[in-house]
Image (cartoon, rainbow, N blue to C red; front, top):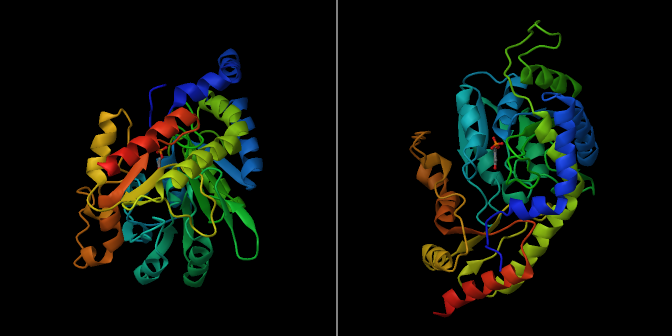
Length: 377
Ligand SMILES: *Cc1c(COP(=O)(O)O)cnc(C)c1O
């Protein structure tokens, strides 16, 4: 049996090697390494796939979030609400821009932003909400957009883990993750659902003016070369990454459905085990399983992880420490612990199993058999 990895990028590459290699070779032949025709082609194709008006490529997902906040004109002191349970990047850029991150608890089952906690966190200084589409499913966007509208707030979706995930509104409208708020931000880090062979990211928006501003900011605040209208950054997607992404975009639905198949197998095999809570699906979102994250109760999480390790099955803890207790944030709020009941609990129980597009039946069988063996002992 092939060695089991959390993510198997090599096997995925081997299947489409011919297409990838020739796409990259085209870039090298053209020597248009920055903003070449591959970047344009990928952006146009991504706009179509996502059904969004503007797709603005940039250097990585963290930059995408920062550029969105800059384009919206957020100012030091403005409060930005986001989830306490996410990758650090979401909160980092809020703090870097001098904005005030206001963290809220997440739902204990779906791990997505808790709506009551969001409502309770809004103050006159609140300017934006950053819902995180964690592990591959969309946050409760219908409620979040309604709350944002009532309170005149911007919505920036962190879609880094949800490229291709669908959200269905009560009226039947279906939208892709990242296309519902003022901005959606994504990452093409190699292990994401749509990953390149280095760093990459993008912002999307349906608003012409915001798109214009974001396009200026990614490129030193200029439209016309050497005429700088606003303070910007240098954040571009390079053409080699676009060459990879333009090929892989054709496979994204297939990739996401392979992940779903693997997840459904895990669900079937593991949901009867007393100490395992398999991932809970949010009602209105599809789940594309960026991660397959279970809750392991009964004090078994670390023991199971160590046991799997001895069987050469990797399992990871995403995320071991909620943001409000990260040293970097020094989130000294008197009521913090009472507020973050769910994130505190979840971070002690989560365990993610290998999840990627190339898991074989043999590997999947072996993984669930060993998990069952652990609980037999
Ligand atoms: C990966 C990720 C990011 C950042 O993306 P990079 O491309 O690594 O900068 C932001 N938010 C979440 C939730 C992520 O998973």
